[in-house]
Image (cartoon, rainbow over all chains, first blue to last red):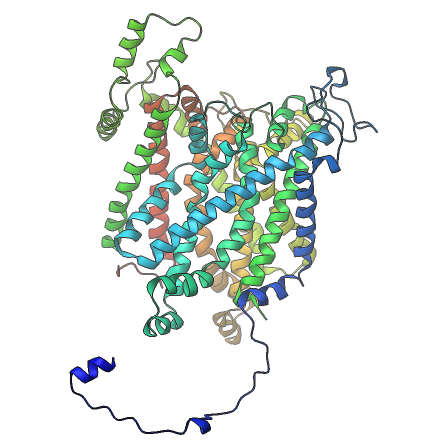
Length: 314
Length: 310
């Protein structure tokens, strides 16, 4: 700057000023300035639904991580003599057609269901946020290409396409097979949401201000646009955890989930169909656990949305 | 408007190409030889298999197979299934069944979804409101097939008020329960959407103006609130048609309905690339056309939206 001025031989006069008395105005900060996430946290901990759903999810999490805390029975121990028993002290939820303990299977089914729901959501949301941000931020030809890609994945019937992807795997019972398959489609809706969010945040004056202050594109994208655009994506993602748990059970029902030799709520519900007429409890328990899990994630997502949405604040 | 429709139609071309390419590629990548699998434990000679493979162009490179499929599809010639049936014949028999199921489901979305949505939105009754809202959440969180099993068991086996399965009897009486189950999740969304739209609009300035003019409550709600609240609901229901038809496979499996979802599912299991891609193409085109119509409808329902720019 200075060199420039000198080379153009423009004289620039700056008056002397007294640096000791440079008080423009005096003000005190009365309210503690906090970020959007601290504020949201303060709101969310006042919401009873947040606590109820969090506690249920923590309980389910403990079942998933330490099933031995809850049951000592092996879910694969299925003596055929115990077939289709009703509830008793030894089998608090009865037994399946094969004679497996329903209670033990329900507890042990928490791990694959939660792992699939949470991992799919994390992968899908991360990829979706990246693609949506790139499309919304850079626009132009990149946006056109990514938007068409999103359209393509939107138009394909999800369950049927997941069935086709699952066929690619040789029969294995790893949950990663299901996580990968669901993730192939899980990024689409966060990407579309993120793109529209970025487009609307980009219009704000503070972004123009930041650009005029000389902030780089990357800085704008990561420091200003991303944090302001991401909140609806986070609350939707929480709700989606439940949706993916349901999706896994649907794939199991179609005979393509984790395979019949593994424990999962979806698999057990699908198997329960054959003895629904004689032993309805075999259908009831895994369905109940699945529904409660899904509901908890819906409530948690709702609580997060209410806290993060500045318009909803009073 | 015409320009907007033109652009939208042009935009669908890469989407149709992309989806068919993706699905055809997926089926191509599936492990195993579908022809050999067809014969089970008694495979014919390798020469005979080679002849069949050549007949279905399975011996050609992927891109040639795909381009051949595309050329055929453009001339409405989808080829034959491995069993020798015309693919267009499969579509002609299975598509109307799923379409009937989906339109019946849409009817329930309008009747129950909008109906309960309006009631919960307008009335301030706490108990009724909470019961409906809670029920919608429960329906959303239970997998469709569980709902299907339970209703099949309760109303079909125990109470004997509706037939348990559909099979070959494709009529309203047999389709009623499957359609209701298929619509379940969407009905819940429609109720919640309608309710929140009405609640938002009831507090809007224009409603206060209408009331200040001295309009009675009935006219305010019917003429002002509903008209504005139902625009997003109508677009949701319209766009849902494509989703319902693609998602019908679960309902079709529960109630033994021989629709397009069922055909598609068994075609995937058999590795029939051409059949799978043809059926998916039909579903994708229905989805795209439904969405396009909804977007155009949007402009008519909401005069603030005009597509002349961009």
